[in-house]
Image (cartoon, rainbow, N blue to C red; front, side, top):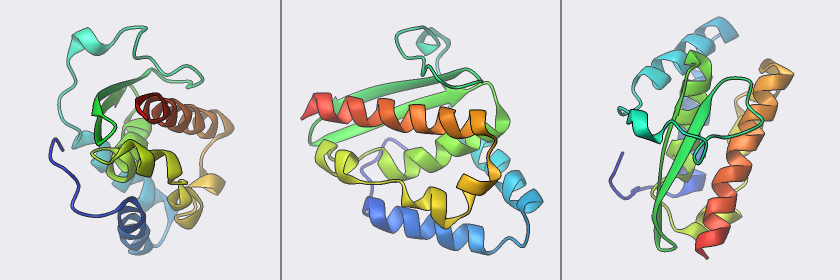
Length: 142
């Protein structure tokens, strides 16, 4: 995940939509989300602190930015299996991209794959908080 993305954020979102279209029901989609979360790279314990914590999430979520305006990288982790899967999707769309692309990209995949309808209100709020923090990091880099 530390390599520069070879697709645009728009292409990454389309790939996510295509992958989720393979699953017939939300039980399978949730399992896929959990599987994606398990593939996140290891997250150092020392990053699990208040400086990187995303507030507004029911579960614990940490988001660590690195890089500069030309290429921003994000590492993230959660103590929740489903939220870890959401993190994996968010990182595919937003990590290893220029800050301007990050700031300009709307998370269309959330609607596209039906997440908006199938997440609890607290998970939806947490996802929006994570996206807001990520975009704030990108805006600060610009």
